[in-house]
Length: 163
Image 1 (tube, one colour):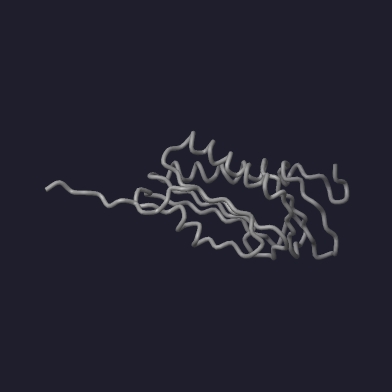
Image 2 (cartoon, one colour):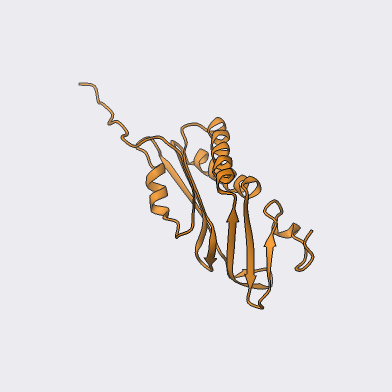
């Protein structure tokens, strides 16, 4: 008798969301999981306490939600054209995000780890560059500043000298 494979009953549908509450990373892993996936990579970006010599108290995110979701979908389409058999979930938080809390999560599954890692890395880097989400950092000294999403930390202007 010939062995049969079990069907994967999960929908192979990518997932994109902008949320104001805590990101449920387990839900993202479940959304991207598949019987055909040998790898599921989860990236979680969190608010760190120190940025250089500045002590962060919290971050605040704003976005143009309709455009952000549209851009996330476009990034997923590009990822699907570069790597095969992906399932993708991307979620970004808006509002106040405290130190140690997740502000963004990207989950990618694929048949093989090399593709899952490559796609996840590309998606988070490109999301940070292209998706219309803006971050304001609040520091312990009472100051705050909007951070340009298209610039790396090293390219950011000195505090108080935004371009």
